[in-house]
Image 1: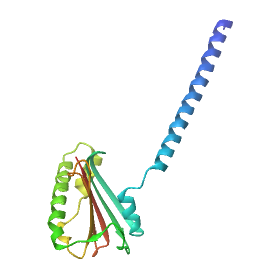
Image 2: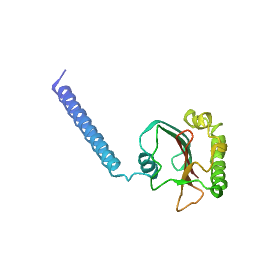
Image 3: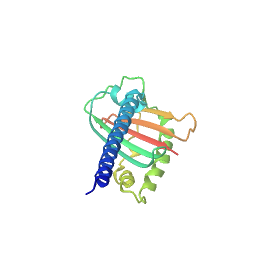
Image 4: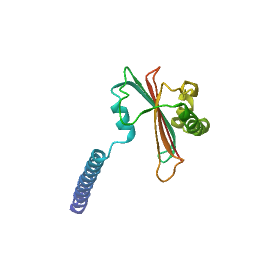
Length: 172
């Protein structure tokens, strides 16, 4: 090997080391940025409601669609739940029709997820087990509509017989 080849090999090795160090520095900056952003995110109504009720024993989440276009079904089971919070209100007889209408819109997405090509999306259809007949005036609820599109909503129903908080999030 002549001197010119040795010099070229050294240059290539130095460039590789610089490139790897640069990639690691960029990776570290990205991880740091996401950690910072994650720590500054305001808690959602879901976070606030779920924690205000106490400690849940199990949770399940199923989703269909994209982040801003789809449906999410969640269930939180509590041993005992604190219903004295600023979010939940007792269901009144006059609320039941509106609640069922919103759930019917949500169930459109559930049925749509059956034909999805993505296995994660099919989990909503396969695991959706809510029965509207359980809704009664012994239960509690909370609903929040999107300010820009009132067709989008996040509905929570707490069933007092089973101690389960159901979440229906729908966004188009």
